[in-house]
Length: 183
Image (cartoon, rainbow, N blue to C red):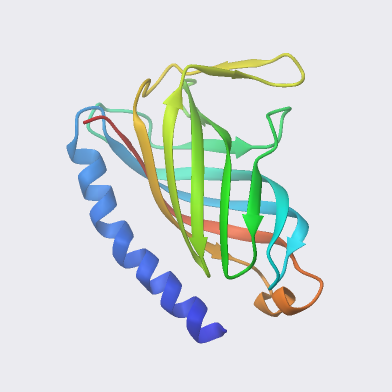
């Protein structure tokens, strides 16, 4: 299992390098390092099932062709946002949800996304949407990167991968690169 995780993380890294270069080369394009944590319920095991999750993270080392901010935060399924849903197991899964990025300069980006994962490697695709209203009545409105596309290659990093064969993985680190851009 550790060898499989190492291979997936290495493969994800090899895919990340060209993503950052291509994202920052397109008009209004950019890329950031993402470091965060997902909380999953029920925990992921070796048996496929439906699940929900929430996510919080930091965006850092951001580079943008339009001079955007260098950092920010991102969240999904918290602060009253719709809870992302998924289906699958530790070995493969798909999810969908809405995430909000709040940039260091006070601007906001709302992304509707889907993910597809195989072992530790997760691919993210999404579209920047106009806004989302939380269950608390707060409306998050896109003020940066409107209409752009989001792409990311991420590594799913459970603290104890052997939990897949037992009680399930209920929390995991998520690390990688996210790019936003328009063609």
